[in-house]
Image (tube, rainbow, N blue to C red):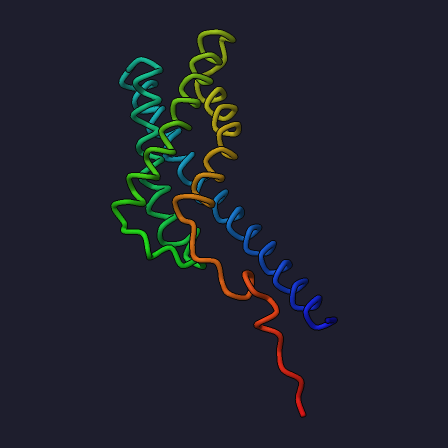
Length: 163
């Protein structure tokens, strides 16, 4: 019985480490996407003078494309999510991410028009709020992998005692 408890603690600790690693990677990828979004927003709104709503939507797509590529190839490469076709993941990613983009757009527009904030400062606040929404969808739906047997049935992975 003690070995089952040890194995469970090991499996639980391993799962917690994976979550932390995924969140760290998610945050790094999100930061890169955020920088690309901010640059595109500066171009579309600051230089080309597109409306804040249109500029935010266009610049968000730049960040989303970058994020998808990095999530597919780095953030969630430790999980087995290859059972989902790439196109399916791409469509699901965009469907879930665009709800975040709508939230960012609403929050950013509120910040710029309602609170008279600088559009880049408003973007920082809006992106921070939606980060947790996006992590949930990418981790637990789009890039959800098969659960390793050790987490499903830890008693089956208990090392046998040496004779």
